[in-house]
Image 1 (spheres, rainbow, N blue to C red):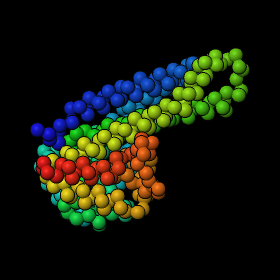
Image 2 (cartoon, rainbow, N blue to C red):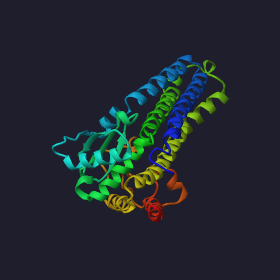
Image 3 (cartoon, helix red, strand yellow):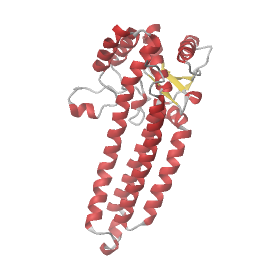
Length: 302
């Protein structure tokens, strides 16, 4: 039978595989850049930087995200009802109660972060508390606890950091090519083939890393919706929350492109929209309509 822990072991393995894969990928890109520029230093920088950032992303993922979003700890006496909801659902899920944080933003939204359930954090915005009914709030919190139970928040945070490393290395190489490269003699550089491959990697590697990050994020949201409903046994609560949150017209001030995929729903409000395959490819979350449809299909079996 499916439970909140169904995907835990799989996600732990995927996290380590992802970190290893990114490490190898970054070293390979660094090697290509070092050969193109005839500078072994670039490879050493790539290796050291990727190892350090792997460690940092694993041990300090919660602190990094909280700092980037401006979240602050929610006092028990001021947010008593929120703490009660989190505690009750954590007990039901068999999880330690996560630390509870608040983001001072009017847009209703939430996220979870931390490397494991013992170091987990659930953060909600003031807009979420102001606009949602209790059953809807429980649906959102259950969704975030599902991320914790399934170890989604670690893999999501690690992907952000590692994708960022790829972008930084590509940017450094391009700057060296077009700024520092002019002061070098042509015969001090590698052949044209290496230069072409390195340029292609510098341009395409960040795009590939971003697409991987977004694809992982979309899949995690569907799984967390399903696990959250198993926890509350009330799909209508999560459905109502999705409708209210997605209909809020303003973007979140505290969000950035690096943290957008961590939130319950996309914190940005794009105009025009569209759901063709190309648009979906670059979405941080599945379309709300698809999430609601999946929840309503679950309704009969819960």
